[in-house]
Structure formats: structure tokens, C-alpha cells
Amino acid sequence: MPDMGLRLKALNILPDLIISSPANRALTAAKGIAEKIGYPLKSIVGNDVLYHAGSRSIIKFIAATDDKHDSLMIFGHNPGFTYLINDLSDFYLGNLPTTGVFAIEFDVNSWQDLQKAKGRKIMYDYPKSIGTRNL
Image (tube, rainbow, N blue to C red; front, top):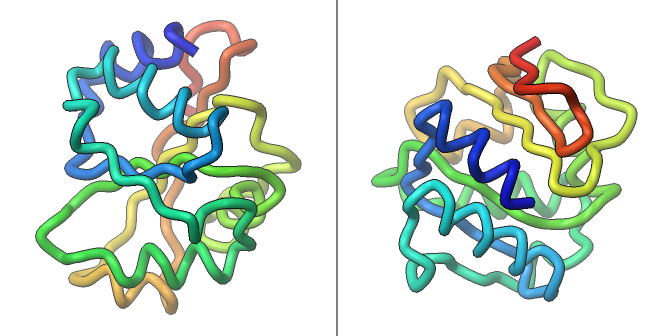
């Protein structure tokens, strides 16, 4: 996990907001990555909605995000996050590995528009990959 944080730091990735499931594994990953990229640990928001949520629930949750945030990093659980990637991006993923990172860019003016949007994959990486995968 620290390796993933270092990879994100090397790409200058620093989200406006980090949100995590309160589950120990997800929150530990969120804190480990936040520490490596320089995000304040006290600013991580825990939310029960992300605990084993399905894709639709996660999309509704993201759509309710305050528009003052331009970028989010969300930590949660499979299979919901794999389905979320497939529902929201132009990329098919069979399974998001543990501590895998997938970034999607959207051409929307508000998080509310996410429910009708399809985003573009801009980055995918995971601990057992060789280097950063910007496919």
C-alpha cells in the first residue's frame, strides 16, 4: 500500500477530498495513501454508505458531493467499485485488485451530472503491476 501512495505522489495526484468506507481495511488504505501524497489525515471523511455499497449507491453518493470539490478519491469495497468503474468509465475492468487505483475524468459541471455521464479512464494501477499503468 505505501508503494501505491508513492506512485500517486510521483504523478502529483492530490485530490480535493478523500472519502472512505469506515471498514478497517479501507480506512487503513486511505490513511496510508493520504500520508504519502500529503493529504491531511484529519481531513479524510468516513462514510458508512460506502461499506459494501453497490455501484448505484456509490454513484448517488458521489452525485451528492459539494461542487466546491473538483476531485475525489474514494476508498471502498468490491464488487461495488469494479462495477462502478464499468458503469462510469469507457473501460471494462474484470476486477479491481486490492488497493488498486482507477482514475476517471468527467466532462461535467456538477457532481449531480455524474448520474448521466460516462467518464474517460485516465489512470489505472495496482500493487502487483510493473510500474504505473497509464493505459
